[in-house]
Image 1 (cartoon, rainbow, N blue to C red):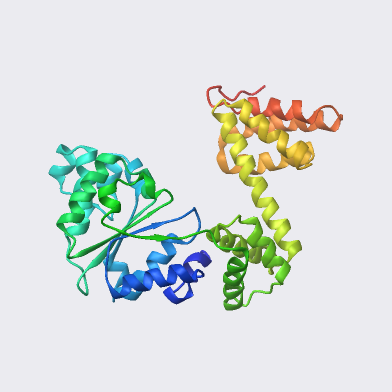
Image 2 (cartoon, helix red, strand yellow):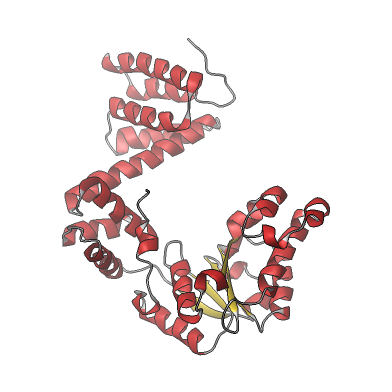
Length: 341
């Protein structure tokens, strides 16, 4: 069984939200149901706050809260939308055949709002990452909001409220959510660690909070990763785990750039690892192989291992790490077939 994510296991109640002004704004929405635009930077806690609100106002929040991730929804194909279990109930076979993707999206928006709530007087439709919504779909949303305002509360979460058309903004009460302060992040991490009986010290929590750059979700997940790998959150364990995670992410990015033929970007990341971060060529090569094992199989993986073996011998001779590792990156171009030699 997979370990549950702490972000879900310890989802905050409304009175546990770390920002007082955010709590007060959402409490106003409790007293007087209204459409909302919740805006703020990535990882500030917008979605968690909306879910906390729905747990307060709905007896069955999982049934009466409909979440649509706009970025995923609008990037999906017509087939993916019609087969998504969240939306397939709204789409019959005739609509699948005869409707355009735009028609299906508009239909799903309308049906999500039209269905009666399971309990209470209204339900909540959360449109998350709404900065990716095209203007024509915003116009369709505006019409749906006008038609179903009595039975549906619309909550639009976005990093860029200015991307919303004015008719939508004028129909919503704005709730700004700023990035949490260092102290607010530390308090949240300490609360979760106490609930998990996870050992920690102040320096460890401070390091995790600082490394997240104001992204509370990232901080919580980093704390969980540290505990799962090291059993405690201290400065030493957090540094070891999180520096490794950061390196893996950059290796993934470097390999993806190489696969796409973007060798300038791939070599720039390689330079950061070798020069700025001080990793040896052998350490970078080992990390590349670790990542490659999760990306490739069969003949492709075997070819990479053969090349890596050759480059490992070149590195042992003490010549330029950058030149040899750049040669390995050049073999990852997806437009070039892997070869035996």
